[in-house]
Image (cartoon, rainbow, N blue to C red):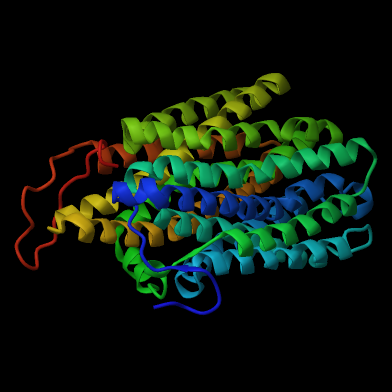
Length: 453
């Protein structure tokens, strides 16, 4: 059976090592590469306004609070659209939706090109910023799609690479902005660069990607994933890792200009470093999780994130720019590691649940792949809401205290909560998998082992 409207693969069994070596790996890697390209540009468009606000001097008439609100609504839309983008892969196919989602990035980019000038009202900037939020959805559909292409033993690396390559879109657009500001160019130069890149990404997806028939029309998977408690537990942890990454990416430059008095050019010299390192290290987080267990890496990563945040509190209080930037860069790196390790946990959790239900062989693999792919989009959406919370926390902290110190204290407390949740749910009482399936109608309640997630 074939489907109209794209290149469809009817048989896909990456867990079969012979199939994987002969044809599967080559096809999966090709789809991964072009998925990363589209997702990368999506991240750039999503974080576009974190860069554009640096171009917006006094002549634009916006206060620091206005700018934090602007970046907050962009982050919010990016989080919300991840839910329908997750369903879209099952409705249209991974390749087909990548083409559509890449093409949609033209809408916010062209709109920003049209309004980016002094005299434009704040409400207009907010409306156009809302459009840019659709770039955040590309992550959800890309992760759901790529999850289906790779075997369980390779998912940590593949998903880490997919997400990390997408995340690099954040520092790349910041570096492009740095070059343009340094050359005394305007924001429309930056936007003019990205419009043809979006078209290239859509064309390459059409030429080189594939749809998997096994994922087609499985919209019920997201509903089943939404009913599972582990989807929402992992969402909390992902708020701590990815929510921190995207929230800090939007806010870092504004904190430097508002609290430390840096000029836009001086801020641009620093803002790209953290997101770049955090993006590049994400695959390593997945690789470490493949080897040592995602829960274990995630647990100690939250310890390190809390420590780095404590240093940020001290640096913010002492108004030490050098210490502040160094600690922030370290925190960005840790968010990248945590992004990789948390997403590695998800396939292992649902594979373990399949075994707990008494499923074996291909049935267990299919169950785990189906629910983990769907849950990734929901978890990604919830995690991105952490970016909204971070920008709103900074906005309130600057309004109340005149600095970001209050926000950092709140983040420190939240990382402690994430540590406690990881330990209590996934590491406190690991038990072996059940030797046989549970009695009919019984719901297994086995704790998950860090070696499995």
